[in-house]
Amino acid sequence: MSNDSYVTEDGRTIGPTVMEMKNITLRFGGVKAITDISFDIREGEIRAIIGPNGAGKSSMLNVISGFYVPQEGEVWYKGAKRPPMKPYQVAEQGIARTFQNIALFEGMTVLDNVMTGRLRQMKANMFEQAIWKGKAEREEVENREKVERIIDFLEIQAIRKTPVGRLPYGLKKRVELARALAAEPSILLLDEPMAGMNVEEKEDMSRFILDMNDEFGTTIALIEHDMGVVMDLSDRVVVMDYGKKIGDGTPDEVRNNQDVIDAYLGVAHD
Amino acid sequence: MPEQLVFAMEVFTNGLMSGVLYALVALGFVLIYKASGIFNFAQGVMALFAAMTLVGIQNGQVPFAHLINAIFGTHVHTFGWNISSAFALILTVGVMILLAWAVQRFVFRHLVGQEPIILFMATIGLAYFLEGFADLMWNSEIKTLTFCLPGELCLPQGMNLAIDDAAYNAWGVGFFIDNLDITATLVAIVLVIALVAFSQYTKQGRAMRAVADDHQAALSVGISLNFIWVLVWSLAGFVALVAGIMWGAKSGVQFSLSLIALKALPVLMLGGFTSIPGAIVGGLIIGVGEKMFEYCFGIGQCFGGVINLGGATENWFAYVLALVFLVFRPQGLFGEKIIERV
Image (cartoon, rainbow over all chains, first blue to last red; front, side):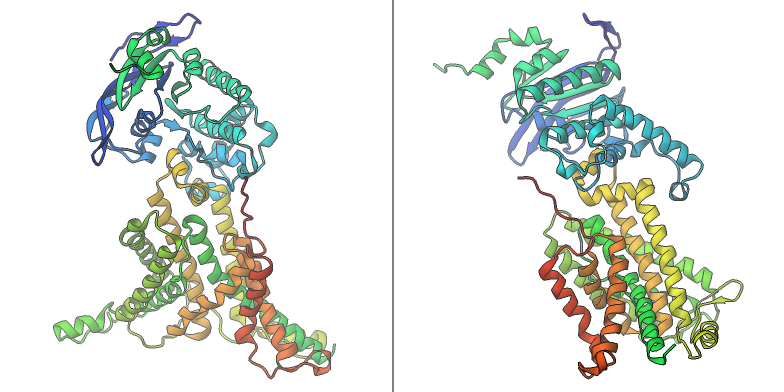
């Protein structure tokens, strides 16, 4: 836990710790998915969790977003210990996420999908909303402006009114990102944002992630198993292998960590 | 104007009006199906239960009177008061919300993620349970429903004399429309506009559509699935109440009320299970279709009576039409086309 801030080489300010995982252990029956892992996420940074397949990265993300409840350990968020919560309650607290295998509302348009990201910000009561007067009207206009800005930002204006079910994979990923971003989250969790993308799409996605962090100051925690991309993007990296933490630090530190090299390249057991 | 044509128009109008009543029932199905993928077989019984509760509260009946008397040897039957329709309506809405909560809490919360067929079976069980429960609570006598809002605004019974007179003046023949049918149409129009406004423009409506589409995604944007499901069952309960009032005023509050659900099935196949406008159009087509078919071919009034099936076609026409639709357009007229990319 650190309360100080510092400025990075490229001029971004990294603030104090916003989330801290303390000694998290997650079991599925007899299988330990995560063993005693601790790390923190600081305000304004891009924090990556990497590791080979089956290392427990997605489980970790699911713990943060409330889809899994760990058997041991504590989650500290904004300086307070978080009690066990349902995923929707975690979302209400300002933690948004995307999914590895995309979870969008396929029957709704892109615009409607992104608008659902702002449900948390709508406060007018049901009656006002139904007759479209007073607070509801102001709110909707306000929310639409924010959403349009995000749609512009992610360059999906052309497909605003298209039902999501018709879009290709790469665009769906972008819409999902837009919906998460629309919630103006304190922490944005990205589960393998570049999985299944070609080089060009990966470059686009990297650019969006960097710009998002830069322009909106969004704190981002992301999971990837493609090491190359992650090293260029992130400020700090947690490395997991077989459910354990084997490295934590800046990309350079991690790159030179012998355990990490072994995990990725394999090591001779003799 | 020839008498024959006026009669045909009368049949047509009556068809439209009964179509509205079918649509009212179908609406309840669509609401639950859209938001939870459950085909709620109990919708008809919910209408019966709602109507019985309304009448029971209005007449000051003691709930579970027979049960209480059997256990304690007492002879209580009524509280001996009469409650105004408006107040009884509010109480009944409360009961339907409670029912929605109970259904969600005790049945469907334990069945999350199960196969659709299992959810469907659960609603059949629910239908039988609710039927018995309603009888136990309010006894099984046939009741008449009179519904009056403050200011002597009662649900009408009988023919509309105004239209009758106007028709006499215009065409020199009578034109019969049930006053209740006109009221039902107006109420249905208001209800549909309210429902569409709710699902398109409110936060809860948007959340409802989101839940219908993808549970995981809905959770990740901060929607409580439980809350939405209770909300949807409450809405369906409210629609059931409206349908129960209209049908109850038409033909008495009795067991056969629950069978109107069967007539809603062909309506849904025509309109599509996921479309609110579809339920309305489907209801109208079935309503008009069965009346006109009966008129033309059932009793042989068209084409010089070439085809005369001898009547009673109303019993099967809707189902045959639904079968034809199942073959040629399984998603219905307005149902969502399933888009799948390979």
